[in-house]
Length: 348
Image (cartoon, rainbow, N blue to C red; front, side, top):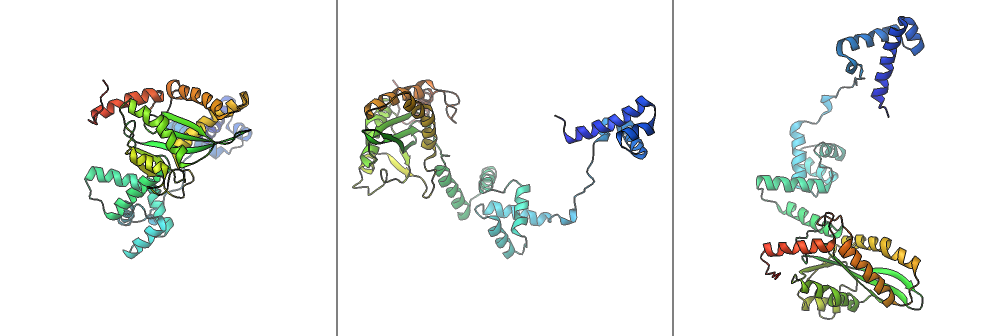
């Protein structure tokens, strides 16, 4: 498909070629709808600069008088680095105190030129400059970076270093089975390897949340001598409560597992589990309920366990750490990192 410029050049060349073929400039101009002056202008351009000279050139020139002074632009960029959490309106107000009078839109236009228009980009710029220059961060900068870490956790963009470093747990509502009632799935995903564990229950309580860990997750990690260090959950009642009375909190305390909760008022909650739930819904439940009528939780759990073997051991994963490997392959390879970090892992 031709671009606009290519079509324009094609028309101009068509005029020149037609005139040459007919050996009559006037007739060619009449057929193509151009004036003789235009023809000779095109011919002169082609003779002097070839076909490339026929490209339309914009007559508009930047009005440098309207460009913000470089010193002021530097102050705006510096403000974005010093206070990355400031929005364009707040930045404009703070600059006004320093005698720099710019509208919020003016601030944003400078940010756009320097690729600083979002909070995330301003933080990235701050982190880069800090690493390059060895800057000592101010309290405002540290607070902004901590805010980014909280947001990353809430959106599933979390730091994970090796298997067991951080587990992600959530509750998934499966549906209602006739004669059984509502079915809930407790889900655990290792954020490094994406190895997943699931167990079905007819209720959503702290006991069921702890049971998944006690029955399936903790024994698996202990078998590989890679203890779970931390678990990330949302703030559901099955995960949060008074530490001395809440069964799930008590289990984590006894197992010496640190508990991290996602940021409040974020509906996307636990990003890693949310993505896994979408996968299991599309690849298992929607197909399984079309093929078969399940009469008990145990019957559904048996089919779910078979699918989990496929998911963990045979299905390739495109996650950040997996890169086309299966979750179990990623898990086993990741155990080597424990050795490198001298965490006391003995694989023999």
